[in-house]
Structure formats: structure tokens, C-alpha cells
Length: 178
Image (cartoon, rainbow, N blue to C red; front, side):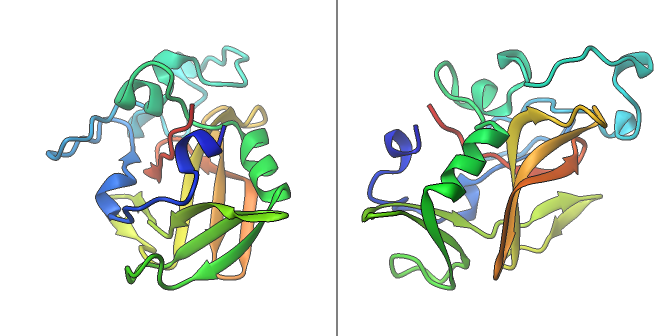
């Protein structure tokens, strides 16, 4: 799954290629964003405080599927965990000649297979925070103990957590996979 998108690393570290999703948030470049959860429902349990019992987003609610089309989706929390379990991760401040901080994940026993995830920060409230020092990558796995949250891959220098959670109203980065 990861190799089909990232074999040999990601040649372009541009922040614009790692879009954020936030309910009702749009940008003017070529990226298309869809509703993940509206900010007004950030601390409720869904429409009219109801909970549907789902543990994974459906394609209609998956930001990667909606932005990049069929075949693309956000990884599950289990897939983020498998990435961490099967790779070595190193915090870097430069990748392929570009001055950008993030984590480089290299497959154990074959470091030619790699995935670079920039520390893109996140959108909280009305602006970008932690750019260059932290990152939050959405998963499609919902946090059943609090349905207004979803699992994410969180990292900062020295710390990687593939099972962190975040409020679904916040603007985390989307890394599509097939």
C-alpha cells in the first residue's frame, strides 16, 4: 500500500501538496477539500447528538477519496501503526535538498524504500500552527469512545504516535494511499 504511492520517496516536499481538511474549509489552489466535520459540531456526537456506531469513514466522508478520486483514501489507524512497526523513522531537517523538517520512514532491511512526511503543522482555530515542528496526519479510523474524534498519526522531533486522536473539526494533513 505505501509503496504504490511512495516508492523511492516523495520528490516534492511542497507544503501545498499536503493539504488540510477542516469542515467548511476551502482553499483557492488546485486542491479540493470536503467536509470532515463542521466546526459547529466539534464537541457533539454528530447530527442532533446522534452516533451511528461507525468505526471507519465511508468513501463519501473520506477526504482523500473526495479530493483525489476513486481508489484513493486515507490510511486507517492500523495502517499508520503498521508503517511505524515495519520501518525505522528519523527526524530530518532537510529532505532531497529541500529545507523542510519531518520524519523519514525507511523500510527495515531495505532502506531504499522510504516515505517522507513533512512536519506540516495543523489548522487550529483560524490559522496554521506548528508548521515545521509537528504534524498531524488523519486516518480514516474513528475514535469510538468519542465519535467527534478520529485517529491520527502525530509526530514531532523524537516522538511518533500512530494512535493519537484529534477532534474532527481540526485541520490535519491528509496523506492519500491506494
